[in-house]
Length: 113
Image (tube, rainbow, N blue to C red; front, side, top):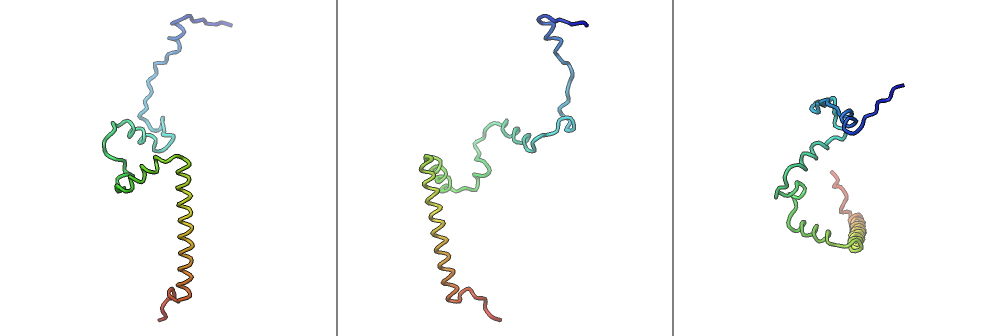
């Protein structure tokens, strides 16, 4: 049995590979997560002053609301969410009463032909 013992730079040079890999081939290097390449390319672009796509449709009132919600503490944000849930529940009760009222007044009945 023969052992080769490399000392210093000889060992490191023996580990080098001079093989050139062509990364342009999609067959050799398929994209593992779809969309990652486009995302990485967009991140490499320099930052522009234009707002993100999702922000283009927001009005100034919406942006102010986002800033206000973003500045809340966790406890305050939870309180705001609970308030919204209570408001939605109250709206549901009111809608139910109005639908019942409409039913008794025959407002929602289809006209007979």
